[in-house]
Structure formats: structure tokens, C-alpha cells
Length: 313
Image 1 (cartoon, rainbow, N blue to C red):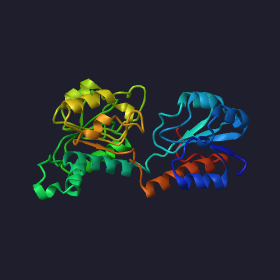
Image 2 (spheres, rainbow, N blue to C red):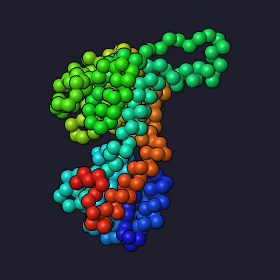
Image 3 (cartoon, helix red, strand yellow):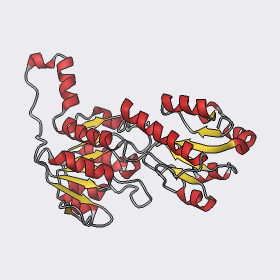
Image 4 (cartoon, rainbow, N blue to C red):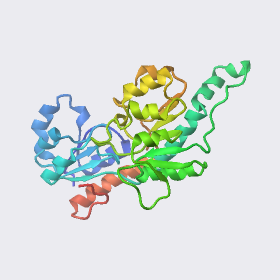
């Protein structure tokens, strides 16, 4: 398979990059400043695009690659891939579901605890020597808080299961009521936010879920509420979130994703009731290796004419 051209859109995982380079003719897109010239010279050689949460395959890229057969995403999210264009051209699409569910759900719980119990602030308090001057202020209990989840898919359900271990009542919003759960369902995000202490964003990013957390939702969550986002940055109207936190209309936030990554609103840096992470939801050695193996397995299956492991299109 060494002659098969693979275009990797950006560096995400050393092991995956190394294996792709061993097995295929790997093109690292980030090494070519003049991408238009690169595509003009190499488009006919590329049969695979390997994307990720920050760079996938939009309509323009797909149109420029006449021999493209498959787009393999190193992510469960598909918002950076033009699925409609892929279907139109008969291009297969795969992602990496399930293997990252546990890590992302674990991190969501970690963000809840870190935000309510002010763990990063406590750490700074000790390191700065402030403890010698007096005890740290009281924080907020997590156990027993009502957790509302936007999107009760694989990750949302895993978060719910973990939160239940803390005696947290679970409620959720999704496009339709789930028949196989006893969790409380709300038909709108505003109603969900009005009836929970902690609101978790865990749905897929689509046109319909863009800015699903807006000013109305944030105000419904209120000055004692906490927002946790382990989904995608554009799920949240970021300027509205910032203003609500600065003005005290929202109690706190734990954020692993941002609307314009890696750029984060500087106003958030000054707030102790906000925990900021650099999009590390699936960022463990174990999970990233499993994700890489899924990408490699899907490509091998495709070129051997076998069923794909995790087909989307």
C-alpha cells in the first residue's frame, strides 16, 4: 500500500503519523505553505484524507481531490467534514467513536468537581503561600446536584452514569425522548437549564446545535448554575458566556473547548470560578492510541475491500 497517497491535515498524534508514514505515501499538509500549489501538483496521488477536530475535509478540499476515496477522522466529531459532499461523490467516511467515551466522560466529572470545589484555585492558594495566612474559603458541594445533559448519546450517557454515583439526579434534552431511560426529559434546552444546577454540553455539533447555549439558556441556568462544555466550542455563544461570567449572571464554567481554538477570551483568565482546559477530552496515551488504531484499521479494511470498522458514510 506504499504507493497510496494519504493527506494528513494537521499533526495530532505521533504514533498515527509514524504508522501512516510506514504504510502509505504520507503528505503532511501543514508542511506546505502554498496549499493551492501543493494540491495542483499532487491531487491525483491522494486517495485518503486523515482529519481531526480542527481540520477535516471541507467541500473545497474534497472537490480538489479527484481520486479521493475515504476520509478517516481522528475524532468522533464530524463537524469539520462535509458529509453531504462525501455522499454525493461516493467517498467513504469513518470516525473514532466509543474508544474515547470514557475519557471524555471522566473529564466532564473532573471539570464539575474542579469548578464547584475550586480545585485549581486551591492549588494556587497553596503554592502562593496564602494558606499560611488563613484557611481557604468554603466552596460548593457536588454530590446531589442536579445534572442536566444536552445530548444523551454515548458520551452523555456515560457522564450520566458517573454523575449518578454522586447521587446526582439526571435530566436531559435531546431531539426526542429516549424510551430506554428513566432520566427526566425536557423538550427544550431552556427548560433543562431552568431545572438543573450543572448544565453539560455533550451533543454533536451541527447547524441546529450551533450556539445551542445562548443568552436565554445561560440566564435560565443562573448565578448559581455551572456550565460544563466537553462538546465543541461553537455549541456556546462565547461572547454571551463571557459577559454572563464577568457580570455574575452565571455561577461558573468548566470548559475543555472554545469557539475559536486555540484562542481563548482573555477575560476568562482573571476569573477564579472558571476552569479552562486545552481541548484534552480524549487526551490520554491509551485512548489516543486506540483512536489511531481505529483510523489505521478503517484504512486497511477499505483498501482490502472489507467492511469498515466504524463507517459514517
